[in-house]
Image 1 (cartoon, rainbow, N blue to C red):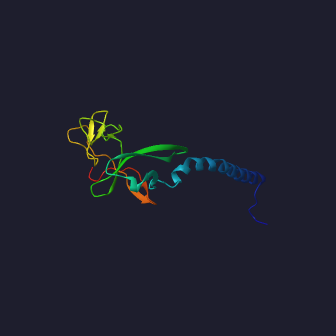
Image 2: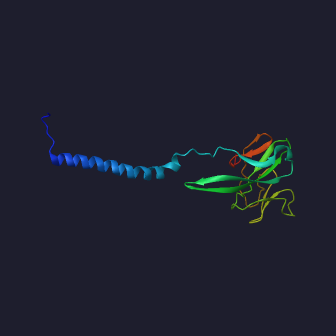
Length: 168
């Protein structure tokens, strides 16, 4: 027998504290996991999204390409439709431009303004972009259109997340 004897009161105090601690941990762990789980999930922002366009079908005339992907905002998952203007430049390289105007975020359209043929046109404030996505001087946009990085897999065009153009 030990010389330090535990009284009945100390034994009940230790037992109730231990049981209460386990019960509190059992209730708090799911709450903590619920709050921290989205932060710990792997980010899929580097993934490329398949479009319905074959690389062989891309010409030097910009064409609108719509693609869908699943977007997760914390615990809410939704299907989002994205858009890109895709064409081959004079060197034969694929160019994928974001349709979002850099002035106020309106959607630009190709060859939509009769006074400015073969340019991207933003109807909100009459912004203009050249075919390569650079902004026309003395029009509202102050920066060129964002570009999508792309990959080709099995003849299909895959697009990444839109990024600002180099030097913009």
